[in-house]
Amino acid sequence: MKLRIAFLLLLLVCLDSSGEEGERRPPFISTPGDVVERMLQLAGTQPGDLVVDLGSGDGRIVIAAAQKFGARGLGIELDEKLVERSRHNARLAKVADRVSFVHGDVLASDISRASVVTVYLLPSLLDRLQPRFVDELQPGTRIVSHAFAMAGWKPDRAETVRVTQPHPGQGDESTLYLWIVPAEARGLWQGGDLRLRIHQNYQDIEVEGTQGGKPIAVRRATLTGRDIAWETRAWSFRGRVEQNQILGKLNDVPLVFTRAR
Ligand SMILES: C[S@@+](CC[C@H](N)C(=O)[O-])C[C@H]1O[C@@H](n2cnc3c(N)ncnc32)[C@H](O)[C@@H]1O
Image (tube, rainbow, N blue to C red; front, side, top):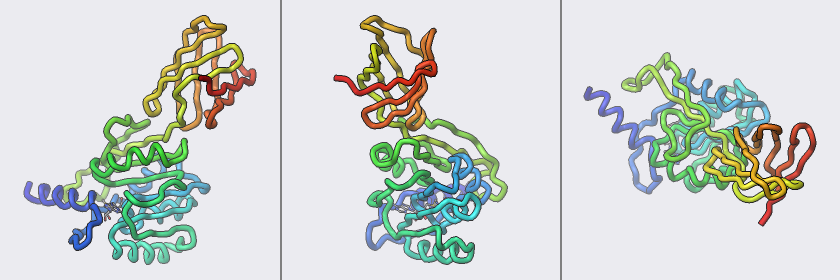
């Protein structure tokens, strides 16, 4: 029991640092190797991706992204010694040309180029990052968190994985969470004689529609990144949200919606 409490206290300090000067840094807690691989799989990591690990520790997630998934990677880490260790580890893994590590505070770093973001940080820090994820990441960017969820933003997926080599007190299971950054779809849209009002809470959308001024019943509306879909009894629409347009097909017939006032 004492060991578990000590571990949790250590985790609290380690996972949620403010970067203030003079701070004494405890050893960090890393994500076990098999969980790293599952996080990157859950994100659907591909060779074209830029994987950014916020609080990158010894660099293992970024290095695995390059080594096993052919992606490029960037680690941002407050502890300078861990940044040096990460660079050394990247050279050993022969991926130093595809990954880089920055010594800095994730709260003050540019994350906008990421197509995959990974985190193993406490909810208090995730809560501070959450508005930036929505405002600064491109729609479709995948965010995977080890162990901790974000308040108010329901994950697109959550799964529990077995950990074969846990840290003392870490337990033999970890929960992973995936969010896909949604496009901004809320508002009024006009396409031909169809008018849509989209209500949005992160990736959850509700669509009210009219045709020629008469209400139509819209159901099964979904938004995944930029991909939007909805149905009526007679039609199904699939499209992409691109700034002020939704480009798609209504029962295979091309249709463009533009933002209306
Ligand atoms: C639990 S470790 C995770 C390390 C690695 N991502 C992994 O999963 O193995 C959290 C790391 O975040 C770093 N960290 C905490 N707060 C930070 C901040 N504000 N900016 C940058 N790094 C931070 C810590 O120094 C620590 O190395």
